[in-house]
Image (cartoon, one colour):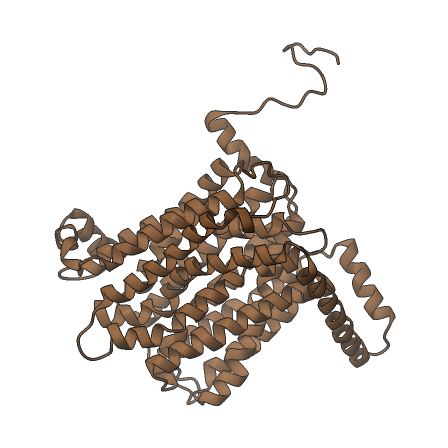
Length: 495
């Protein structure tokens, strides 16, 4: 090799940058990212903003608009709506591999648009559940694994870790927007009338999420199809004649391909170990889910009616936005499994803050931090309930742990996926939500027992239950790591 003026040989790899320059160089790989990756980020933001607005509203809508008790609302959310979405997500991954990313995007958004429209206008419980909640679970499920598959497909190997960190950061930007919308619409308490139709506050929130859903259509339209997807669609079209026949053949062929891919997935030797890994992560996801399914009622009953729980929950999302790119860049050389264990332990430790006696935090609530939090950030008046300070501290600690572990769970699923099965494995990465949702399904009974609408309350006991559940994840991952850990593509760290 010929030496250059600087003494390096032609053909040698460029020197690795260190320090601050090296840190920013990790993000520079996205400069060459194709248009579809940036569109994926935009779609992620819109989907999760609409989804989060709906999620925060769901339990309140079920109880106050449709008349369900705490127990029934918690069971419907935790044991029907949320698990149904997870089950459909597991199936949707193989469907995406079968019919392509773009078509799955369109199908999911169309179903969500119909379902949200029903939820805006009806107060009949059976109609709302059958034509609104359940179809929405299907539509949301179709959009979930396709986002992960799109991130994997539209990013290079060098862009993978940063792309998954960015996609998770974008999701949290959506959560911030949703939290602000949730508090703002509730505090406005508008009395609107459209030709005799007077939507409640919760129906107004669903209307906002419907508007955001409609905005997703143009973003999907500009996604270009790859050669493989074009060939797949041409095979379907060539085998059919007529519009209705084409739809029928597409459904039949997609179902056959989906079943074949899913059978191959289950038959793989590492499937059981991967399954246990994701089940353990579910205990951490229960903590994340309670911010949508438990915190709104907890806030109204312990902190006061229309308490700004959206802004409070946004502390988590804002910190994730700030922390996640940096942590993703600085830890990308480490195996995803190791980062999941470390982050899970930090998350579990943070939850215990909410189980401590509130009286311990009264001085902090009356001090500069509590006054800034309550009066400056949350816009409260008068004295600050110490639970606001406790929740803020818990969310700060939890956010650090989440920045370590959560995006790496998705990366772990993508890294171990065989070629052509990215969406199937991406769908498995959402299996932890099923465990978390089943746990959160008990929230109605927990709220009735420890934070009832009327009577004495013991919220500390409720939070202790969540903290102990979260601890199962890091402890289980450490104890059983030799049995459940799977080698990650491109990661030599497997000790």
